[in-house]
Each structure stands twice: as structure tokens, then as C-alpha cells.
Length: 139
Length: 139
DNA sequence: AGGGCTATGTATAATGA
DNA sequence: TTCATTATACATAGCCC
Image (cartoon, rainbow over all chains, first blue to last red; front, side, top):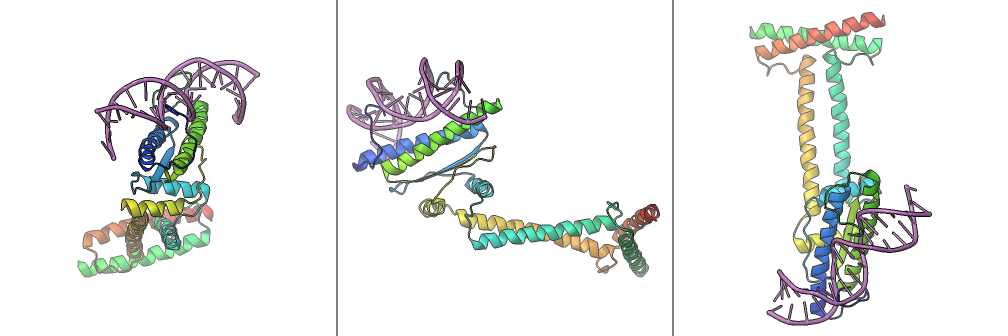
């Protein structure tokens, strides 16, 4: 490449190696940005040289999430997985609470059986009784 | 590049975009491998296209550890923190839904003001009306 | 180190099968 | 579609600051 062809093996001369590292790193990052724009893709490049220099990354976390989801590879350790499970659990709990709430408000009733309707009716009557008693107290 | 110059913006034609994605992805991965060998560096490229295709990575975790150590950026901790924040957010949401639900059931009313009681009373009456209408349909 | 400069090797856009 | 092919644009090795 350039003024002379090189073969792909470790560049022994330290300063040449560092110069090449720097140039090629920029090249790769540029290409990554390009494919991101051109192809509507996510691209993350993480390069760390022996010099300790390394490329920054903006949205790496999101990218890695996507990567995991698509590839099925697990990058995070058990702790993260537990947190994720906890999130899923709470979300589910939240959903069912929301549904119950909507039913009590008289929404989305078509999926309910007659017995369930009776249950909600009783709950509502109880609630109404309690609320009215409380109103009297405050009045 | 190639037969004609292109400007770096989203390729609208889908098949062209996919072809370009595939070619450039390979190009980037090749470059990454080269810099690894030439410069004694670690390089990891994670690319995911809208097609759901994504580049495999062998030692990504090790790489990311190195990256974190060298850059001082905390990927794992940041991820951890994000998940924890998400959990807190959902928990809070869940709590308020639960409280509303208890109020509708006529529980924990002592903290409510008169106006709030009126609001719940109306909601309950509406709910009851809807439930009873629905019961008639199913009967 | 880091930036500019070519000559040259590569990557790749367009094309065709 | 996914492959070859090929002309062209781009990246970069070796220099010089």
C-alpha cells in the first residue's frame, strides 16, 4: 500500500508501528462512521494499541445491547443478567396491575368472563362503600 | 469509490444499501484484523445492520475490559447504573399504580382529600356502570 | 508525536451474469 | 437475489518537515 507493498505481519520498528497504528486507526473509524450513515447500520470500533491509546466510543453500550440481542452472545455477567431479569419481572407485574386498574375503571371488559365481572362488581361496590364512608368522616 | 464517487449519506435503494453494507463490513473487519497484526493492537469491530446481521467477535469481552482499563470509561458500571435506574423508575411507576389500585378498592383512604375521594367515587361509579352493562351483554 | 505529501496498493460502486 | 469483473476513488507507506 502506498509507496510500497507491505505484508501483514507485526511491524518491528516501533515508531513505524505507532505511526501506522495511528493512521490506520483513523481510517477504520472513518469507515465505521461511513457505513453507519450509508447503510443505516450501527458500527462500533474499539481499538486499543499497546501504547495505551484507544478510540473513544459514544453509544457503545446501546450497540453492545443490540449485538447481544442479535447474536445471542452474553457479554454481561450474572449480575447484569439478574438486573435484567428483575426489570422484566417488574414490568410484567406492572402490566398486570395496569390491566386490573383498567378493568376496575370499566375499560377493556370484553376479555372478561361473567364470573370475573361479578368479582370486579363486588370490588367496586366495596370500594364505593368505603369511599362514601370516608367522605362522611371528612364532611 | 469504485466506478463512481458517492457521497456519504444514506443509500436509499434497499438492495444497493445491503450490498454496500456487506462489502464494507467485510472491508472494515479485514482492516481491523490487519491493524491487530501489524501494530500489535487489539481491535474489535461490532457492526449490526438493519438486516439483523452482525459481525461475530471472539474476544470482545477481554477487549472491552482492556478498553475500560485504558480509557477510564466504565462500560460495565455504566450499564449497571442504567439498569438500576430503569429498575427504580419502573418500581416508582409500579408503586403509584398500586396505590391507585388500593384507593379504588377502598383501602388506605385516610391520606386522601375530599376532592380526591369525589374523583375516586366518580371513577368507581363509572366502572360499575360499565361492568353492569357488560354483564347484561353476557347474560 | 503529528501534519502534509505523493506513488502505489486496496477497497469498492457500478455493471453484468 | 448473489456472484464476478473492472474502472475508479480512496487509504496509506514512506518521506519530509
